[in-house]
Image (cartoon, rainbow, N blue to C red; front, top):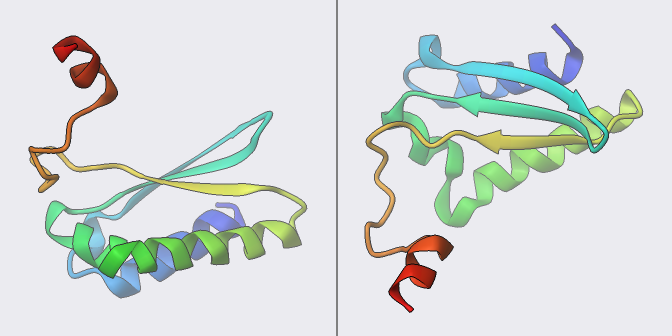
Length: 99
Protein backbone atom coordinates (compact mmCIF):
# COMPACT_ATOMS: atom_id res chain seq x y z
CA UNK A 1 0.00 0.00 0.00
CA UNK A 2 1.30 3.45 -0.95
CA UNK A 3 1.95 6.05 1.79
CA UNK A 4 -0.90 8.32 0.69
CA UNK A 5 -3.45 5.50 0.76
CA UNK A 6 -2.12 4.20 4.09
CA UNK A 7 -2.39 7.70 5.59
CA UNK A 8 -5.98 8.11 4.39
CA UNK A 9 -7.07 4.76 5.83
CA UNK A 10 -5.35 5.47 9.16
CA UNK A 11 -6.93 8.93 9.51
CA UNK A 12 -10.42 7.86 8.45
CA UNK A 13 -10.48 4.75 10.65
CA UNK A 14 -9.65 6.97 13.62
CA UNK A 15 -12.67 9.19 12.86
CA UNK A 16 -15.44 6.67 12.16
CA UNK A 17 -17.43 4.21 14.28
CA UNK A 18 -17.47 1.44 11.65
CA UNK A 19 -13.77 1.17 10.83
CA UNK A 20 -14.24 -2.27 9.27
CA UNK A 21 -16.35 -0.66 6.49
CA UNK A 22 -13.62 1.77 5.39
CA UNK A 23 -12.41 1.02 1.86
CA UNK A 24 -9.99 2.94 -0.30
CA UNK A 25 -8.94 2.48 -3.90
CA UNK A 26 -6.01 4.17 -5.61
CA UNK A 27 -5.85 4.96 -9.32
CA UNK A 28 -3.26 6.88 -11.30
CA UNK A 29 -3.87 8.84 -14.50
CA UNK A 30 -2.41 11.88 -16.28
CA UNK A 31 -3.99 14.20 -13.67
CA UNK A 32 -2.26 12.46 -10.76
CA UNK A 33 -3.40 10.08 -8.04
CA UNK A 34 -7.08 9.64 -7.22
CA UNK A 35 -7.99 8.08 -3.88
CA UNK A 36 -11.60 6.96 -3.63
CA UNK A 37 -13.03 6.55 -0.14
CA UNK A 38 -16.07 4.49 0.80
CA UNK A 39 -17.38 4.43 4.38
CA UNK A 40 -20.44 3.12 6.23
CA UNK A 41 -23.50 5.35 5.57
CA UNK A 42 -23.77 6.26 9.27
CA UNK A 43 -20.20 7.61 9.20
CA UNK A 44 -20.63 10.00 6.25
CA UNK A 45 -21.32 12.97 8.51
CA UNK A 46 -18.10 12.39 10.42
CA UNK A 47 -16.07 12.26 7.21
CA UNK A 48 -17.68 15.30 5.60
CA UNK A 49 -17.80 17.34 8.81
CA UNK A 50 -19.62 20.58 9.47
CA UNK A 51 -19.73 22.58 6.23
CA UNK A 52 -17.33 20.07 4.69
CA UNK A 53 -14.43 21.10 6.92
CA UNK A 54 -13.26 17.57 7.77
CA UNK A 55 -13.25 16.49 4.12
CA UNK A 56 -11.40 19.68 3.19
CA UNK A 57 -8.78 19.03 5.87
CA UNK A 58 -8.28 15.45 4.66
CA UNK A 59 -7.79 16.72 1.10
CA UNK A 60 -5.20 19.29 2.23
CA UNK A 61 -3.28 16.70 4.25
CA UNK A 62 -3.33 14.28 1.31
CA UNK A 63 -1.86 16.95 -0.95
CA UNK A 64 0.96 17.44 1.56
CA UNK A 65 1.58 13.68 1.74
CA UNK A 66 1.53 13.59 -2.07
CA UNK A 67 4.08 16.40 -2.34
CA UNK A 68 6.56 14.24 -0.50
CA UNK A 69 6.24 11.66 -3.27
CA UNK A 70 6.05 14.26 -6.08
CA UNK A 71 2.44 13.34 -6.84
CA UNK A 72 -0.79 15.30 -6.99
CA UNK A 73 -3.27 13.46 -4.77
CA UNK A 74 -7.03 14.03 -4.98
CA UNK A 75 -9.77 12.55 -2.80
CA UNK A 76 -13.21 11.40 -3.94
CA UNK A 77 -15.73 10.37 -1.29
CA UNK A 78 -18.34 7.91 -2.56
CA UNK A 79 -21.89 8.62 -1.50
CA UNK A 80 -23.35 5.44 0.00
CA UNK A 81 -26.53 3.85 -1.31
CA UNK A 82 -29.44 5.40 0.55
CA UNK A 83 -27.43 8.48 1.46
CA UNK A 84 -29.10 11.43 3.13
CA UNK A 85 -28.62 13.91 0.29
CA UNK A 86 -31.38 16.53 0.12
CA UNK A 87 -33.96 15.33 -2.45
CA UNK A 88 -34.70 18.97 -3.36
CA UNK A 89 -31.22 19.36 -4.87
CA UNK A 90 -31.47 18.59 -8.58
CA UNK A 91 -28.81 17.49 -11.01
CA UNK A 92 -28.00 19.54 -14.09
CA UNK A 93 -29.74 16.91 -16.25
CA UNK A 94 -32.95 17.21 -14.21
CA UNK A 95 -32.96 21.00 -14.55
CA UNK A 96 -32.37 20.82 -18.32
CA UNK A 97 -35.21 18.28 -18.70
CA UNK A 98 -37.59 20.63 -16.94
CA UNK A 99 -36.78 23.40 -19.41
